[in-house]
Image (cartoon, one colour):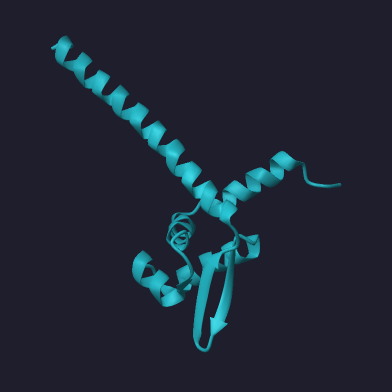
Length: 113
């Protein structure tokens, strides 16, 4: 029996649900990067980065090429970059809404004292 589309979508978003994977995708929006540059930018252990890159590679949203001893990663397509930009826009709106609520809460505390 095939997996329902909503379940496949949930699994896709779960795959994105790791801070290192998100950071890798953000960095790769700027273009292909060798692993050594990803390591320097993210600051995790090589084994941790390797594990997260493998998850992204298996999911098909990043690809890798080897140039001698250097492995270079890049986004598999522009859709991933668009998804990351959409997530940033949504998060910006959510956080802006929270700052408005926080300010209202602070004002109500001042008025209550």
